[in-house]
Length: 386
Ligand SMILES: [Zn+2]
Ligand SMILES: [Zn+2]
Image (cartoon, rainbow, N blue to C red; front, side, top):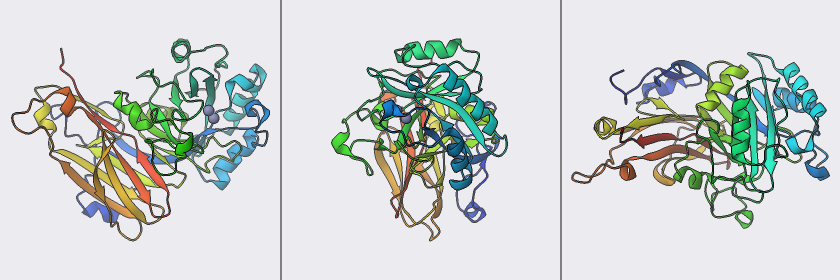
């Protein structure tokens, strides 16, 4: 591996052949086992059923069976994670919920992702996603801090991942802590609105804090991709936020692996397809480099491809929370693809330091009908290597 910053072999299935004639570099690869073809699967990672009536105030959610049927047949999505409130269900209900999930899992057709919502009054809300169905009920009653939660998850035989949500609203998730291994993503959009940054579109700023948004979180140096979930109380799944996952196949294992690598996009509910890479590394990648090889990194080749579900108003490239490039005027059908070369390494004579080289970059899509999508970021992490 001697060209660490020019990678190849990542290929998405949905790419419009017409766009291949443009400058878009369609083959990418990351080190390790994630080469090859991937498919973009859509689903809702955060729905509630009538098993967790949220302290009785929202008793109208559908049953788990109705939720799976809606996700599959009405919303036409590929996966669904029912994440009922762990503190409101019994061990028997949990066992029943996992039995129903296992029954609705159909590898290659539809994935019923085993999940649960963990919450405490002090530390807010996080969802837990498992890679198997035979797991105990873990809740905020038994594990009262995020660290205790991650300790417990590490002791399981199953693998587990956590994702915080509505971290900038009431009941905010505590983002003073994260776990770089177990917490790969941030729920950027749900029924509660857009949590990208304070004042973003589709947000109730009256009920938001000015920190705790996705951008605030990433500026702390966290490696978190973006997902979307419905979190409707009550609502059928896949009506508001949804997640797109680039995975090798439509199985629980494959989706789990892809989420752990942050190969995700989030949307406001429309199945907007977005692909994004830097120097060939796909979304979610952390590109680490040191003082000796930083020169190979620039110019950054930032490739973007979009297939909207309606006319696309604009596509933004966001760096460290700031929009640094905007593209408008897509084709009429909402498709666009381009490479933007970012030459902005520090001017000659300026030291290359972690402060001016390290960054996170992601893509934001806005359609004329108001729907939006975000890719997970790619990180450039300066490492002294000492
Ligand atoms: Zn919640
Ligand atoms: Zn919830």
